[in-house]
Amino acid sequence: MNPTPAPDGLHTLSVGTAGPRVAFLHGLFGQGRNWMQIAKAVSGPRGADARCLLVDLPDHGRSPWSSEFSFQTYAAAVASTLESTAPGERWTVVGHSLGGKVAMMLALAHPDLVERLVVVDIAPKDYVGLDRFAGYIAEMQRLPLTELTSRADVESRFAEPDPGVKAFLLQNLRRDGDRWRWQANLDLVAADAARGAASRMAGWPEAAGEHPAYDGVVVWVTGGESGYVRPEDGDAMRALFPRTRQLTVKGAGHWVHTDAPDVVVAALRRVIGAD
Image (tube, rainbow, N blue to C red; front, side):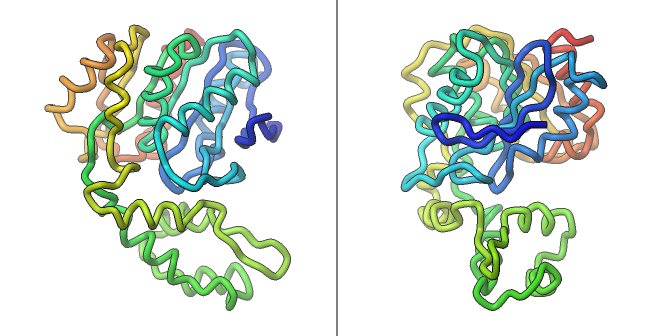
């Protein structure tokens, strides 16, 4: 596992030493390393089945912040990272939630880079605001960074009752000496959430329709217990990605790769031909 700051500034982690190239893109408030368990399994016990790149999207993890969000900008930053990591090579790109939308935009705008696409529990549609994240954003903003004394103090002050969600959100809090700061660009996300139904992160860019349909293989992994993808979303998905095959994972919620990692690993290994 090697931390590699890409020339364009996006931070990545690499797993595996040989095999096809696979890039992983995380969701909102995530980081590339959220895919570490899956990447290690996909790359195989000797690291020879795949070369995986875990990308911190802009405004997340150790990657630079931007002043304004757009899927086109995020996709361009990822494209530059993939091109500089392996010039002339093509990638299987895996994206969850926000990262899934970025992956779709990447495939449409830079099809020569993307050999295969795996979209995890998101559809190319407008989700009409970040209401599902509003409470998380507010709780993160309420945390008094200048008063914090220890990680235990952070844990006691952060009121999120779900321990899994709490740990996921607090992975974004970093201590530098005596100072605490959010790694994620919380102000940008909060400003976008304040746009309500006009949220860009929750939306789907009209610019996507300016590109030809992507003709590569697409595996659409959806959670059987998640409400993010509806049956009626299939038409919009196949209009842009006509070779889409949907895999619905029973019992899994929105974080399919956390709820059913073995199923996701098996699917990915079939996609890249490691099995």
